[in-house]
Length: 329
Ligand code: UDP
Ligand code: MG
Image 1 (cartoon, rainbow, N blue to C red):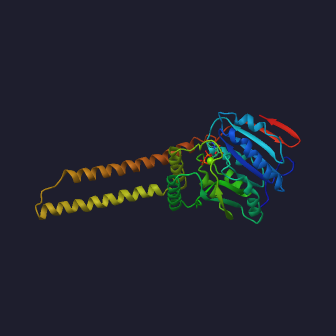
Image 2: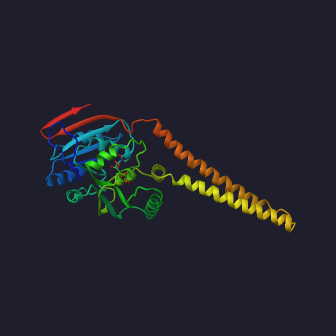
Image 3: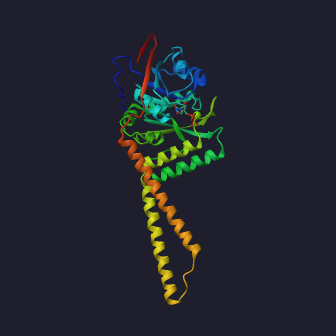
């Protein structure tokens, strides 16, 4: 662990940054702030909260700016529109100035009370403190099952180990944050990106609470998209699988053809059938389309990368430090 940190214009170095991505979370801001600032006033380090408003359509932005000053400084960042949680976290990580950074969901599913424990692990030398959920309260068996299947698939395909049941709630040291900030890819599959730099890791197990209020912003369509993104941005094994599938079907077709030929010439067996033809035909067409679609996924990803568009656009930054208010556009 190094104590690098960016130069903070000669001001007091911030030790801990808490990055909170928010999209239409106006109902939870107050309870979150009360719990978070209580915890931050108890830890004996300088801290800042980086609120990232991911283009909310409710009054999240107004509320965040009206929060009273507390023991910690606030950076309020408003993205120009909704870019998605991954982009919001990227923005937060780039703006955070702390020697260590904690990513925290706004909806109080990640208890802020665990922050002292995370800091302790960091002080003991861990560069990454993974927070692993023990029980997923308020989630259906189907969600739990699909989540477990996802981790199994991604870990068998990618070289980066994505720890199971570890969400974005983690502590990252400055070195890890700098490595993540240096990754140029537009496709931000955070579970992979956060694990990619490596460094020394510890895991703390915690009970994940149900959402405090409001609804999850994820639906199954979005989750399937996220899983696809994760697999295709961290592994090219699916392409190799397609090659194997092609090879195996071609080999089987060849063996079967040979068998049909022997049957017809040796036993004079008439060529049987429509059903087997259809099965083979449809099977092959299916595999071809699947392989094409798979290639399309990767080509689409290449297309998104070569466009080189920014991951997010910051519309507004408001910096509130104890004792003074500084607003910058
Ligand atoms: N979030 C965001 N942008 C989005 C969707 C969500 O910044 O487009 C934030 C949201 O405000 C919350 C966190 O990401 O702080 C997690 O979202 P949510 O609770 O909906 O996801 P879940 O906990 O169900 O995975
Ligand atoms: Mg949530």
